[in-house]
Length: 124
Length: 124
DNA sequence: TAAAGTGTACTATTAGTATTAGTACACTTA
DNA sequence: TAAGTGTACTAATACTAATAGTACACTTTA
Image (cartoon, rainbow over all chains, first blue to last red):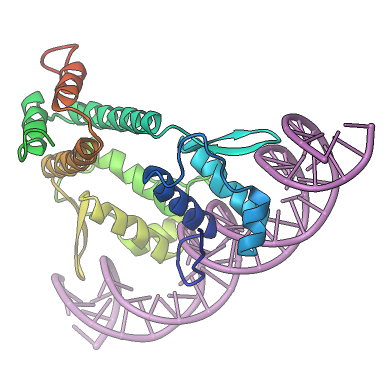
């Protein structure tokens, strides 16, 4: 299910996290299903459990999985995940706009930008 | 005019670039005036010319100064600088919105956001 | 309750990158 | 041509990220 590329510039934990992100978003790993254990993956890939742990910590931080002590890690709800990502994206956009306003960008410029982005295909 | 703090976590070239950013934005160093030479600053601060050079490269990249081969570095026009910063900021905002649209954020949400940012104080 | 499974915390080692320095080169002006 | 300037290349160093080693703590189940 998971493989590692030692040629890649990406650190192992990023490769692992990335693979799981895809599997979760595609629904291959459904919500609340159990993730493979840190130890089993470590053995399977012949790397240190802590590296898997780091990948899982990342996924947890991003909202892809949730840990249960002594039981294992489980796949989070993808719908919730989308909401979270939207929220953080809107927050980032707000911060950028605040800075832009301070720099003298007019409100109309942002309105134009929004119109521009939503130009093609009224309902995306 | 320039001093260095060896206690600081910031690398030397960042400290130097930061100091000049302020001086330029405040107008202490007017447009088209000559920057101190890489060598003179290096001697004054007792550090390697290349470190000054790195700070200057950064400032050049950011549009604060422009180099003339064999002559020296000169302060750029601050008005131009502001324009550049606005442009890159708008570009970043666009990228963010594109991603947001793909994620399912509605146009109205962005319009609300713009209104929100420009709420207090109609003319900033 | 003991054993086997799980995640977690801590430290140490290694690898990689950023930072600074050394030195030599090339251009401009007087 | 000499003295000023920036620039490119390489080397040394310092710092941080990435991985591994090991021990601990919790949960389930036989």
